[in-house]
Image 1: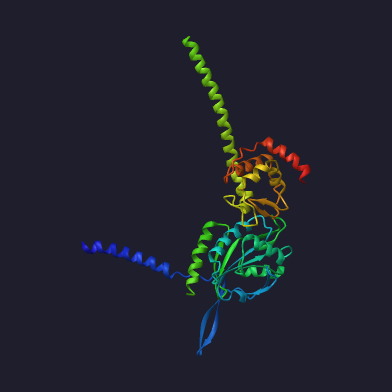
Image 2: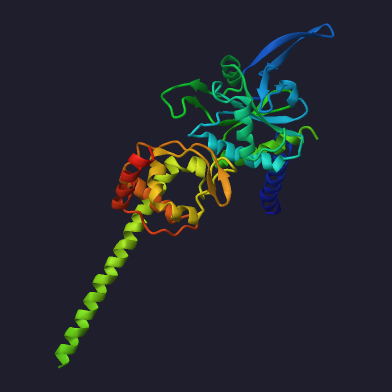
Length: 214
Length: 145
């Protein structure tokens, strides 16, 4: 009789502890393609996994200064793709990213990188005016421009869809994802920047990622 | 004598009913325009102007400046239809981002969306009728464009 009572309560206790553990030890996956590589370690051949990384890049920012991938070496960053006179999803996206920026403003562990896909119109001065009006006042959030090949090429690395398309409002088609990148340039999360629930998920998972570096 | 009194009461009651139904018909129409307008607002305006008409920083102006809206009531239809460029002052802040035109909106849709904006976000402007929008649009096709 006692054991019958004890078992469910033990199970319940385990479940509660188990859930708690899960929350504390949760880590974000590394997204993207991966391939096995053979390495020789101490005379033994071992198989290691090569994860997808954001390749090195160099772009011109809103202050007409070249920034590189090393600008983001000391922290995690959130990348997205937009253009300044985009009439469709960008305002919602940037409004949501602004919330994240405002929360982490002054916190050097988190940076932001918005790529303009309108390489014709969005010169550094246009990007500067846009950043000022949006309310971005420090260099934690970079707005960059580059050649079409460079920008659209790096979008593929972030797994974000971008395309020049005269058939859509504004002339450029793209998806509104926020891409969370860690210090090793691995993609750790992708969130639809136009959905409130997904943005909340970004807030939560960003904290989980930052805990890895504590 | 008693009958006359009854008739009088009945007559008064019917007058009251007619008046009352007129008034609530107006209220129902405003509500109807507002509901239709909200759908259009979500589709065409909300990206920039926000769910609460709050705008976005210095990029897109809020729709909460009742004084601006009231003073520009006749131009609002043209602004929605043809867009807007050049600086404007909203809540004492200057905005200078070009607003794209919405040529696909019909006059009745503009009436819906303006009724929604004009009676949301703290604004209280009465409804925009189709006739009012048509009158406004006639003036902008020559002067504004």
